[in-house]
Length: 68
Image (tube, rainbow, N blue to C red):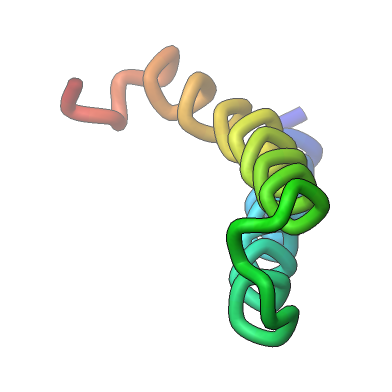
């Protein structure tokens, strides 16, 4: 069970980081940064990153390894 949770958390972290990279690439390489389309894509990427990155944080908090 411990290995499965570790693999799930690793996958969630990697996917969350990929969404952050997608948001940064959208901000850097598509010229009109403040257009509606770019802001929508960046916001969707950041919300998806939040969804995927919150799972490992909640796991660490429940295990007592997160000092918050």
